[in-house]
Amino acid sequence: MLKTQFADIVGLIKNARTVALKTVNYTLINLYWNIGEYIHNKVKNAEWGQSVVKQLAEFLSRNEHDLKGFSDKNLWRMKQFYESYKDYPKLSTLLREISWTHNLIILSRLKSIEEKEFYLKLCLKEKYSKRELERHISASHYERSIMGNTKLSPVVRVLQNEIETIFKDTYVFEFLNLSEPHSENDLQKNLVLEMRNFILELGKDFLFISEEYKIQVGNSDFYIDLLFYHRGLQCLVAFELKVGKFKPEHLGQLNFYLEALDRDVKKSNENPSIGILLCKDKDNEVVEYALSRSLSPTLVAEYKTQLPDKKLLQRKIHELFK
Image 1 (cartoon, helix red, strand yellow):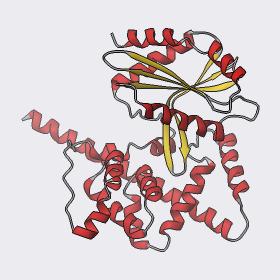
Image 2: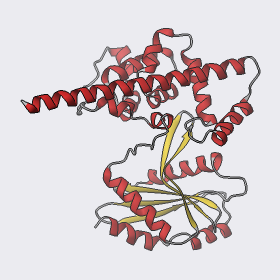
Image 3: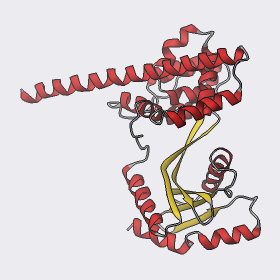
Image 4: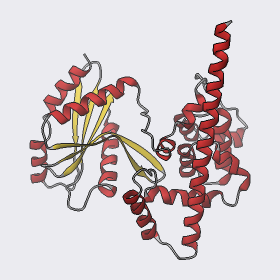
């Protein structure tokens, strides 16, 4: 009897959390819409240009430290978001019922309004995670449904926490000025934490910047496991930790991150960013450096003398997986 009554209380709590999450998400999307509309009108009337939006982002960063998620790239995204849907009021509710990250995926990957509407409705109906939405878009389900009227295969997963999964979005946490949730599993989180502490123990030249450092490329967000600044080399150092067998595309991904860092984060007086890839499978440990092609042979040699020795890093990875 008591268990049933306790379950009723749990139900009340979870229902209240669901309502709260939906309300916050609606408010956030509505805010982004309004900001996008404001910037659109300023640009349309030739009052604002790209430099003004950048000044706005810098002003917010400098004067409102608790306001996050308002980089110049994201402000332009808000403008694009408003412009893409301003003539389609019937989609207004759908936009506000899915997360900003889901909206960005649909905004960046789909061209026609018909495609956008299709995936907005599908995302809301099926409660897709970010990865599931990406997978269905990559599988061209819109085109297949139009051509063959095919049914989508059901997603096999547990749905009891679906509302939290959908709305526990990075941008919601930034909006509320809360710590960001980590997307990795507990094993990955612990490994990243251990590696961070190890790097800091190597010497005073490594200055820790961030874990899960977010970079924005176009309308997509990416996260670097660990980002440091090296005082001796005067450059950013990105670490990526992969649990599994080394694959060449891991280096390609890391180089992609370095290009984004050099373009958007690196200061003009600093050297090109470098990356260190750490991979571990059941048989061995792989450590690879990712260096900019623009580096001179002399600078490459200097980098390698000041970076942690590969064998030392391999031993540390081996210890972590014992």
